[in-house]
Length: 331
Image (cartoon, helix red, strand yellow):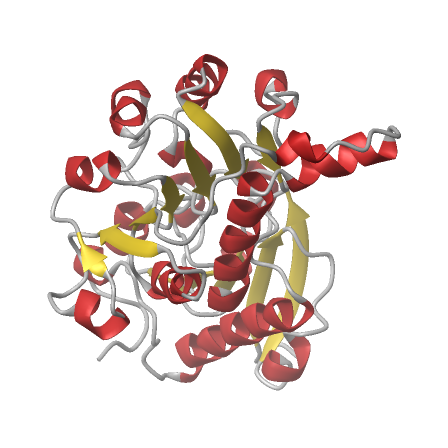
């Protein structure tokens, strides 16, 4: 119908089976299945709202300049570093995210990687499949209870990871300058007031922070050296938070015992050194996923789009400070 809005699903998915029941009475839905920004150009002039996943590396003013009707971009995920917030805001376009859909899944995945690394599960499995029966393959496995797990970023996912880690008897400490004082009391964990303070005591380290100019390569050769010898690193946040080359060097020297990586600086993973390193467990940016979580993500994304189009204020606006003359209702 000509009087309906137009919603563009930019990338990653090839259907709209979750979004259609939520939006079909007010909007036509176009699934672009694009892999870069240029492939959206012919569809943007008619778009009133966009759903963006993570296949497109960056959505910039090149796109916003040819989208006169676009009210908002809803990033289907927690992170939003693949959208130029300032460029969108300067044209009155809102950028929203879905901050709470995969909390349980990512926290579970982080703990799963930690357990697999410390218990040498993959090494034992590989040996058994080759006919080797030798308990000493895992003889240097550390006991978790009493060891310190450092968490960088104690938002929803970091907090959920902390709660799970406590059940294993880990002493949990976090660094996050953005969460309010008292968060540590609420969760029953400890707080470090600097990254250096956190790293020096962390036998295990789990990243749950955003990627921006301040956190890019937050874990690098210098910060890796601050960790105790034999530390284990888990990253389910963003690949750019870790300098992959520096991490491989630290694994080669034995300063770092192992790494569990769900995210990478370039995705899909192209770095053969990372791919083939015997001390690394790899998963394909899948920590967010469960059957229920996938439906929840897409449902909440579509509901936020509906609010943008229906004259309601969005719930998860992330570029409020950059907005000028917004094209949609805000609080």
